[in-house]
Length: 96
Image 1 (cartoon, one colour):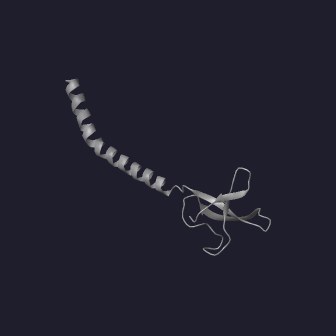
Image 2 (cartoon, rainbow, N blue to C red; image 1 turned 45 degrees about the vertical axis):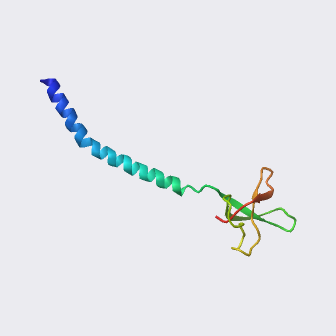
Image 3 (cartoon, rainbow, N blue to C red; image 1 turned 90 degrees about the horizontal axis):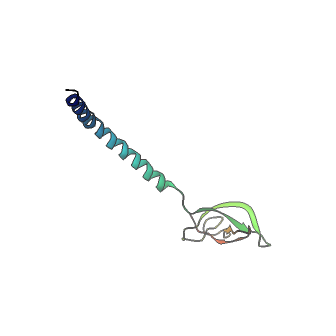
């Protein structure tokens, strides 16, 4: 008798909980996908060069993803470079 009640309750529980579990997994998957798409891969800070060829302290939003060259003021400003391991502005950066 107990086995029959246990089996029927288990079946009812699974029938009632499964749809909620599927919806919860779907929502979790949607948020995980959106957060991965919003990850700003390739973003890097660029710096212009001063008259001595050293990095200026002005930070410019650039990217490492190849596109048009990153510049300080749109398409006409000074070119922005990324810093290498020796803190020298030698890395070519692109518009984000």
